Length: 464
Ligand SMILES: [Zn+2]
Image 1 (cartoon, protein in one colour):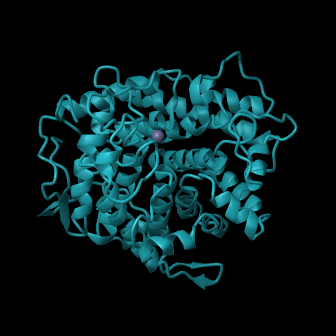
Image 2 (spheres, protein in one colour):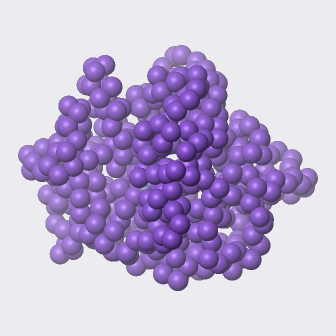
Image 3 (cartoon, protein in one colour):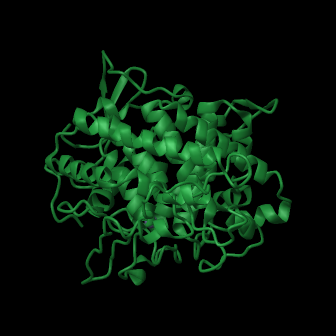
C-alpha cells in the first residue's frame, strides 16, 4: 500500500523482536504498570529516528501541528464558559460540531509526544511548550468558570444555552440525533482527558494533571447518578476509551475515585461474550467503538491487577484473557493483509473480507487503536505475534496513511480495486482520523525498541 517505502523496510510478517543483552540502558520513562511488566517502553526522548521516510513524516507533522492556533482551538471552550474568545474563530469541520474538542485532545497528545522527540529542534520544542501553556491556561480558566457542574469543561456546540451538559443528559435517555440532540460526548471527553494525561506524562506540566483530575471527579459524580438502565444506555453509545484514560489518570493522581470512575466504563458482559468466542461475534459492531474498550481492558490489567482499591484487592488477571481473545478475533477474522479492518466503520461477518472490499475499508483510527492494544499485549505477554502485527500495520496502515508531501492523513483506506486515498484538509476536516493521525506521526519512534530488566528488544527494522 505504500507509494514510497522506508529505506529500511522489511517484508512484513518477518519475526520482529530480536533481543540483545544490554549492559547500560539509557534513561527510561517509568510508571507503575511498567514496574510489573516483563517488557517496558523506552521514553520517546531516548530514540532518534534517522530513516528518511520517517523523519520526513515527522517533520511534516511538526509543521502542521505548529501551524494550528491555540486561540482558535480554545474558542469552543471559551464560548461555553461565556468567556472572551479574543476575536478568534472556531476551526471548521468536526471542530465546529457537537464533538468539537476531540481534536484538541488528540492535539494535546501529539504535541506532548513531539515535544519529547529528539528529532525536534530547540526552537520547535520551545514553540510547542508555549502552545501547550496557552492551551492549558485557557482550558483551566474555562474550567474554573464552568457553566456546568464543578470540573466540567466542554468545547462542543451547545444547543441549549442554559445547559452546557445537555448532550450528556440526552445520551442517558438514548437520544442520539446528531443534528439536534447528541453525537458522542463521552468519546470526546475521552480524547480530552487522554490528551491532558499525555501532556502530564510527557512534559510534566502540572496544570494538565489538575484539569484532568477535575474532569475525572466530574465524571464520577455524573456516573453516580446512573441507575442500571441509564448505565446500560450510556454504554450502548460510543464512548471511546473512557476506561483507558481514567485508569491512566488514576495512575498519576492516585485518587481511588478515578479508578472507580474507570470501572463504570468496563463492560463485563461484552468481555465475557468475546472470551466465549464462536462465529460472527463482532458482526455489525462499530469497530472504532469496540477496539478502544479493549485498550481499556488491558490498561485495567496493567494498572489495577493486584492493587487495593476501596479496601478491596483487585484481581484483573481475567482482563488479560479478554484482551487476548478480542485481539485474536479481530486478527483472525476481520483483518486485511495491511493490518486494517472494517467496512464503513463496522466489522462484518467473519472471514468475508474480500466481499467487503470497497472505498470505505480500514478506518485509520482502527489501526491506530489496534497498535495501542498490540504493544500493551506484547509488553504483558512477550508473545512476538503482537509485534509481527505491529510491524505489518505500522508500515502498511499507519505510515501509508500520510501524504508524504502535504502531511495530511486518511480516514478510510480503500481495499477495492481502482480506488484512491482521500486525505484530510489542514483546517476544514478535523475528522477522528485527522486527530489520531496527528498522534501516529508524532510518536513514530516509540516502539522501535523496548527492554526488560537485562535485555534490549528491537521490534522494528527502522534506521534509528
Ligand atoms: Zn477515525
